[in-house]
Amino acid sequence: MSDREADFREFVGARMESLRGLAYLTCGDWQVAEDAVLSALAKLYAKWNRVENPDAYARTAVVRAAIDETRRPWWRREQSRRSSPGVRRRTCRSRPRRSARRRPRST
Image 1 (cartoon, helix red, strand yellow):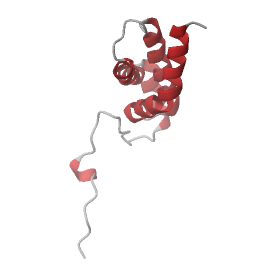
Image 2 (spheres, rainbow, N blue to C red):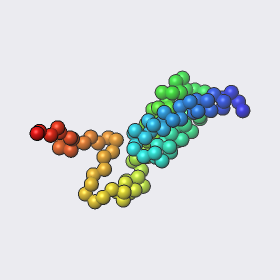
Image 3 (spheres, helix red, strand yellow):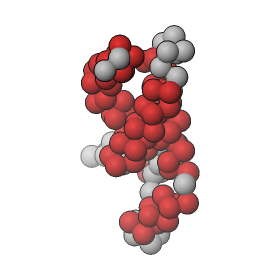
Image 4 (cartoon, helix red, strand yellow):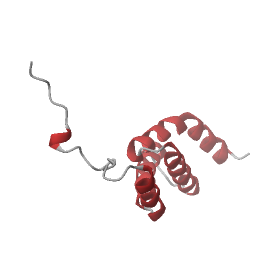
């Protein structure tokens, strides 16, 4: 195993869980988060020797990959089948409507 591979494996071992968590926060699905992280890490490996800050590159690539995954046509199709009719599923880019927020009860 070359030094390049050893360094990359060490990087992945140290940051895999935090990258998965970041991807999950972005898309809300663990399987999609895993796919996004693996896709981002594959791109990072190809550029490993040229990247000055691999941690920042990996975080940016993971967020972009997770957003790209949620834009795919199969994602929209699967999400519409999961939710009940008339129920709006909240995505990472949507905010709850003002009326949907909890208000303290007056007693």
